[in-house]
Image (cartoon, rainbow over all chains, first blue to last red; front, side):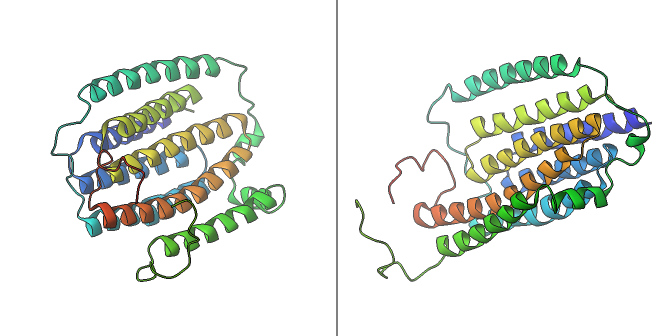
Length: 178
Length: 100
């Protein structure tokens, strides 16, 4: 049952990713990526990570994709790839390198997966409890947790600074090396 | 239980699709979406290994990755909007001068 569910979800994730890659309209790309994120959330649930399932749905599928769709529609940048590539050979070369990377990654993952067997037993039953994750987050990973707070604050300030209008003439920028 | 190798191969495939998106597509927003896809693929591998080793630390790392990705998307999209306002294009080929 688990394996069947995995294959169905993996197929959905792959279809979403490939459709994002090939669709010409950026809005369609964003919606296919949303499908992919949803499938990823189900995979997290299969891997006994209910907390990450929730985070994936709210942060990725909710907040981030809404931001993407908002910007695509705000800019009206749905189709900008009508003109041919400036470098004609860049697409076939990209595909070739991508296939090469897939080969290397698959070989490495198969090699790495052939290690010692995974631990099992009663620890497996209680694994992935959100309470355990939260306790770890506020004890051993307290400093990284606070740093993420600072990162989010910097991101907010950065977005405000990048998109402010009408203050271009103010002497905010030092005339360095212009 | 599904073997971890299946998850890792799926993760590798999704990562490759993301790399292809960055290499092939020229719409800056789609390039950015491909970066998000790569982050997600790495997250999937982390969660799969965390499940295999029964170690919650991998999940904590994924939590941090998602948080940083959210900040990155906010700043990146603000940059795209700023570029679009000055250059009036979202094509990465058109934005090649590094001048304002």
